[in-house]
Amino acid sequence: MRNKRIEFNTEKNDWLKKERGISFEEVIRAIESEAGLLDDVQHSLHKHQHVFVINMRGYAYNVPYVEDEEKIFLKTAYPSRKAKKIYKLK
View 1 (cartoon, rainbow, N blue to C red):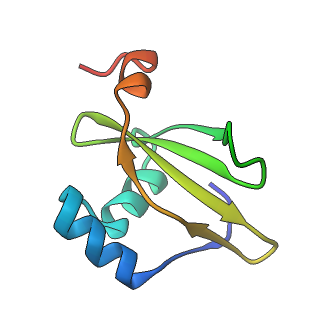
View 2: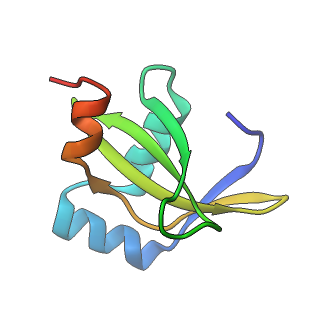
């Protein structure tokens, strides 16, 4: 994992908690754990973004982010059936 701080929008975090039942705090724990981070890929549509693919609660989540010299900024998090199949999560 890069030695950069990870940031996120607190309003987006509140929305994720309410609408998707997950939080950026949980996402960060998954990213920082050896078993939680499955991949780090280039975003297919937004070339300036990358996507962490994480295993959280036994399901694959995509977490788009942007990065600069100092920090990683998490944009959102959403479950991905496609990633679940690719990374063979049960």
